[in-house]
Image (cartoon, rainbow over all chains, first blue to last red; front, side, top):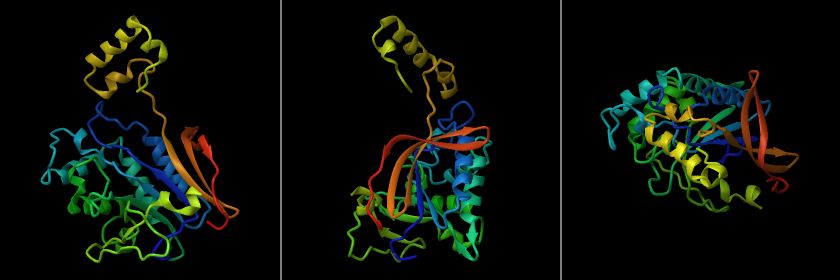
Length: 192
Length: 82
């Protein structure tokens, strides 16, 4: 894979907002999303990516939510992942990123960041604690399992900044995840 | 959440919606009002078919355990070889 990855198929979802106690949950399509992820995983195409374009989990829906809660975020995240309403989705994501063709990964989950907070993942609601690296790492660990670095590296972090063909994308050596400026919408192949 | 034209043009009918919004304490409460909350899961699907890149917004539904995709707004714009 080059520094600008290419895929045979790309699927984009966003604003899943998993979180909250029963009756207080915005997300109500567990079966559909889990089955959809399984369906993508089993597609015949060799290399497929699922872009999760922000707001995957919703800390603000949790009991005792705070605007900024670095100490309680992991506990909230653990609860969300274990919640019967959301567990099938996390299980499906784990299976998804674990698929390989031979020894090569064939399914990629891509989470996005934004230009204002270029190193912050938009994996949860705005300004929530998942923007912080420990929360991001915790979530990625949940998705990929422990000590599977190669799998974790497949959850890549992209900036929404414009990608100009012919220029070198910016790589941030400070992060384990590939970090570069790449704007899917700006690619000629999609817009022209 | 969807307000119908009928609800928006009738004081009486909107009053019922307003009351439901006023009294609801949870999302589940809102869903007891018929038709107020809609669930329409969708995904953007970008594929390369025959050298052409296709981007579609597709509704995702689960029918008898099988995923079915249907176009919401088909958009076929691409170039050869991406």
